[in-house]
Length: 402
Ligand SMILES: [Zn+2]
Ligand SMILES: [Zn+2]
Image (cartoon, rainbow, N blue to C red; front, side):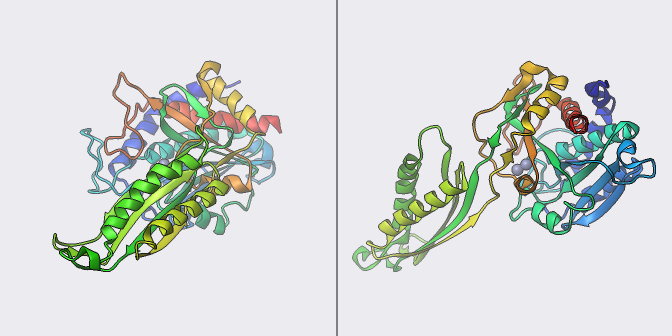
């Protein structure tokens, strides 16, 4: 049996330099043209069939195992997909490192640069074992994970799940909740269901000296924030995630005019689509109860985020065993709490069984403690080898099982 971690360590330096290159040149969702070009070239150099422009800037590589499809590169046997997201975030990189972002206002602060490098590493390992593979591997490089409506749905609409169809999918995400050297998975429902909202509260503007003649939307907005943030979380049982966070407030101009309107933005995150709908209803009822008796009006626009990621029970033991071969049993964590993130990998896992797992990166000694989306987010690049090895091992074990 191959030692997959050793194979991954052999490609670690390649992964590190790829990661740093993507890190220096981050691109926003649906604009990942340079990124996609490098990915495509690399997959071609590994002898894969490559498709570009899938669902926008998505790239797909297909590796046909010789023992599944025959030496001519047929497509017999099962197909497993690996998925990496490739977009960066609209924020400034504040790190003082020589691979810091060179694109002002754009940064790879969600670790997607690592996801790409890891998946290219896994591609290199698996293409080197083509003669041993009894099935095919589809490498999906997906644009725009961090910007709604995401790149997964356009890729699916562009046929990424056909020709050949795949029967399982494995996706990873770096996660500072877990220590460097560990990997984790939450079986079943793994991520929150979310709503992004825009709430506009209208009153009657006027002179600040005549408070009895105006309906002040600033006061109503403040009341809505305090009341809902205090009361709504109590509608969910303790231990079950419930996040209500206001993130923007706009309205008014000067100190002596009561404005006509205030706009608020924010998010609600809970553990299931049912609870999401329930909490959105409570939220709106509370807003109505505050605003309308005071003589104001409101509009609430609620946009659903990505669906909950479902980690299939059929694949969890297989993934656990594969991961244990790389990091040891004691470093494979079965997590019991929903992670408060959204990821459109959920759309793939609605269609085929999949595992969305977390690669630990927290390393206090080296100072890697920043959460995702922080302007100084970084990690110890040695974990790239763990990522690639676990993904490659999961593929090989999947073929071995069937
Ligand atoms: Zn993100
Ligand atoms: Zn991400």
